[in-house]
Image (tube, rainbow, N blue to C red; front, side, top):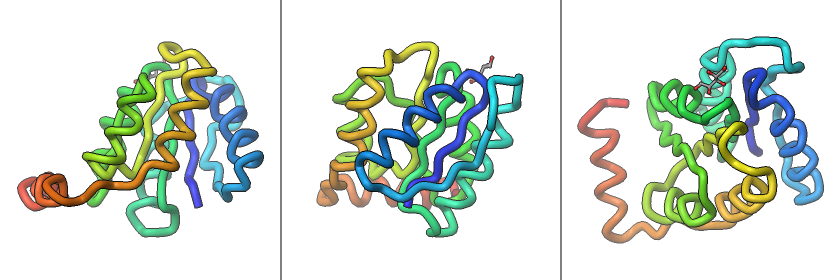
Length: 145
Ligand code: RB5
């Protein structure tokens, strides 16, 4: 299960991402927004982050203009590791090294073709564990989030 959310700037990409997930036969839940009318990104980031943190979704995908507001907000939730990703390599490393559980995308900064690849790579890359395990644990143990 993937939780998806966007503000007005990310709405169109969110709709395309839902189509992509359907073709990949991956279940998703849409937390809004539902149009290009102006909306506040924290409203959607909080809902998606809560859903992922509760274990109801394995991953979240959040889209705003830059991905920045979404990732800052999502990272305020306990157990969330949101990564604002603009390249395919960063998508791979966010999973392999950081065990990221939320992908934040900037619709105004990243072309759709790249976003498609970012999502495919993010969802198919496993956390490497090993030396990265204790580093990821330290993120949470030292911040209590
Ligand atoms: C909305 O104009 C824009 O500020 C928002 O989508 C996002 O980029 C914030 O981080």
